[in-house]
Image (tube, rainbow, N blue to C red; front, side, top):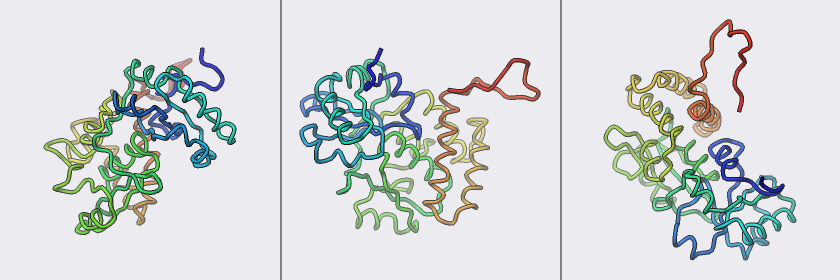
Length: 276
């Protein structure tokens, strides 16, 4: 049983991809990272030796600290963060326990460089509908929770990417874009190594809605309708993104936890909705 300041890999895996996920801080030493450079989804790397300098950045947010085996480095960093008034837990068994569980690990090969504030910066076409909302959702939930998204005139995306050091996505001729029948969301799952049953199920819905193939999943028509509705509700693209995050959170939780659940009226006697 984990200690009071420890979280297990199974517990953390239930939080990743949801709005309740903690900030995940990877404090492994360089030699361990060189042996396996993958990261827990959404994790940021920090030097354990300078925790006093960066601890305040995490104020007001729960933190899970990861080292190689969940011993001295994560214990020490988590204790220092708690000293700074931050709710911090260590990952029991560390990176090795997470990898042994078979939980998703983020491949860093194509991670964009971070700005001075430690954020990745992305740019795409204005007036998003589906892929240009789904991809930011995926990035913020599984890649970089602090990612910044710029929505600009379609013809200006390459120039803005060049002048502002942003990574372009969902336009023609760039790395992060449609490939054959795969939409940009599919490409990001593949290139970041984030395959899971839930994300694969969600990707089919997004692909169907985004590429006019509503036959791919029964839910695709609903996502298309909701997405077009959001695009009419909001003139500001960032406000639309903020509002639609909850829509994708709900689709993800359904894809992960509720695909077998049905609903009818009247409900069978003694049956209640499932909660997780």
